Length: 119
Image 1 (cartoon, rainbow, N blue to C red):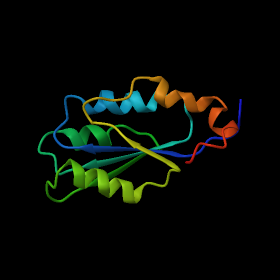
Image 2: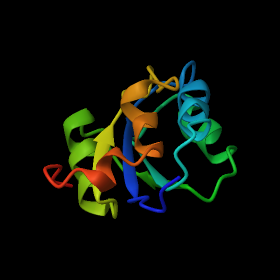
Image 3: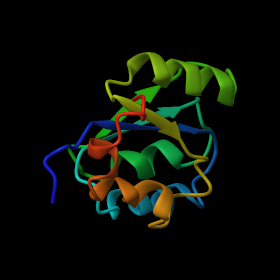
Image 4: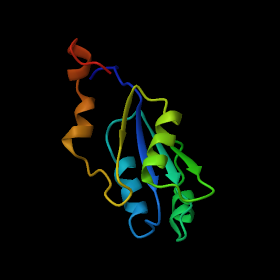
């Protein structure tokens, strides 16, 4: 196993996704790749989304909140400016990321060995 583990920033803009957000966040936390930060932007939700997010206690989660609803594009751009990862990606708050190969491939040494991959 390689020690090459670049930080991945996962951006999650949220607006009124109380029915989905816990499962979506848990799908990120269950990934096998160890070096992630999960940045969540609650876009002034009027449901229980923010409360549910705050109940999830994990040091990889960073919560940002808006003071008015500005839309998913604003939330994603806001988080992109806050992200520290060498690799940045985003998910829909209602979808999650269920141990798919596109995310877990980073556990092998393919990135470290490939000089053509630009991070």
